Image (cartoon, rainbow, N blue to C red):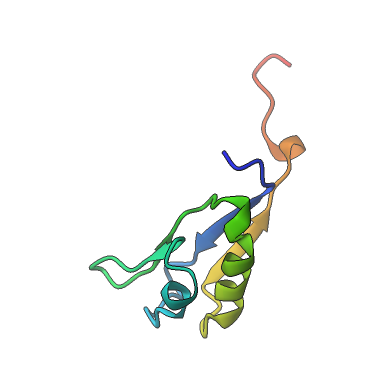
Length: 79
């Protein structure tokens, strides 16, 4: 866990395998045989600038970054 309150994702319905994300951040993104990009959802803090660059460069806007917070986590049953 990186401690980052963010999560990276790929919208599989939008991705068209342009692979700009892989050119920008090969440490985070991959393009498997099905031609839909995949990503490390929780990259190290040092790679988030590249993740943001890749998201901005995606021609289909298929890369998203979700801000998460501990308060958004469901509480254990009975509490």
